Length: 219
Image 1 (cartoon, rainbow, N blue to C red):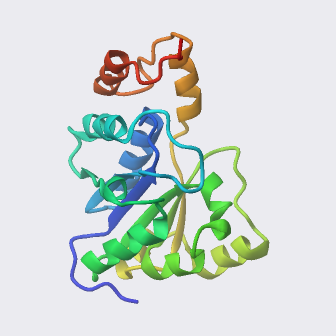
Image 2: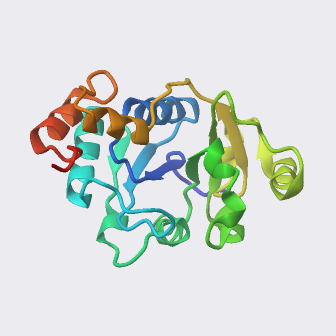
Image 3: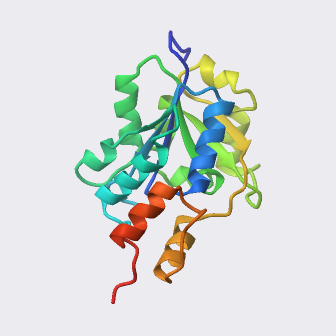
């Protein structure tokens, strides 16, 4: 499936972002530059059908995300999953984006931990017909060499960023990103215990967290 005229691939970085933190942002920034993405779309999930509900409201998570990426060219917030009724699934978002951007390469960003569970995603077989997978690899996670995922990597894997420009979908690109040991779960624990999240989140995000008390421990 060759790519028609475009100004570069569109990256897609989804998640609950509860809250967005510097680990997310550094990964997105590195991939934006490395892959020469035209833009990286940050898509916060509204109703995650696969996990428990986020602690912060959709409105606050969206506000934090917008504050976090406001000054970075190429970062775009896309709130379609928050506007969609019912549970959010990646396949639905990719089908919408493919209809809107028929000739553009789409690059779905996910961590190696998420990739290891890829075959449990809804309609996972159809995802590679709609987008490339860009797997952000960190130390401590082993690349699958056997089984269904090992076969998928052998058949579709590439080490060339140019391959993500040459076709609209279908390849898997694994790249090691800077290791920042920050998790949203650990960050929420820090905040609920009364400690300051400074230097773990962008300062505008920290301001929203402290002013709204959205992660404060219930009395």
